Length: 265
Image 1 (tube, helix red, strand yellow):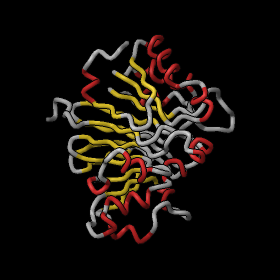
Image 2 (cartoon, one colour):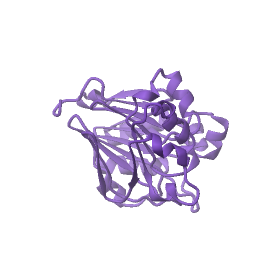
Image 3 (tube, rainbow, N blue to C red):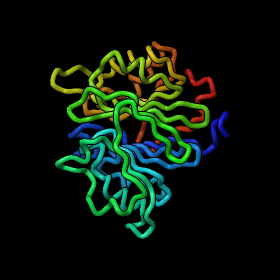
Image 4 (cartoon, rainbow, N blue to C red):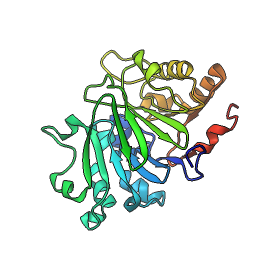
């Protein structure tokens, strides 16, 4: 079904909380993203509590084909080991791939060494990388401005493109790089902070207005963004840009078929 969006092409938000305080108190969950695209199941950024959210949402970890990290920070990688174990049936059904930047395998590796033998392959992500997960193609086009090695992801499924702009400080290259039908943006801040390399709500709106996707989803909210009611911010962005902007909720399932509809309020 290369030219149409499959009915099962979905993105499940296993958590919408980001940064230390939100994660420590689990004000919002921090389980990352579960992508079901063109018959493949991919888990992206399994933060603390991911295994709980997967089972709560009645997803089956053993159906995963890959686990991917945009970067090594704890709110993105805290449950990577338990999710690899679950994907591989505790090693009894060795399968699947693990993708992560090089520094995730450095002096403080995020993955326990014994898990390598359970996996079909461990793949290092790099800037400009192009990957093929048994027919599901994706890219890591650009290194982000963040304290550790960090890459966003662009998936191609069912004739659609899905861009995930993970943690980064704003820079102009983001707009040129992440042209996509669906844009998912991590938004931690309400106001810029000189020492914190994260996007603000204003940054997100600028990116959305510049890219003009069919729809955009905000997620990975910091405490101040949560207090500012991200659903209200999303509504304002929709009205100002003419693009449907959604504030993700824990457990929300977005179907790619929605991109073919007139989604503007």
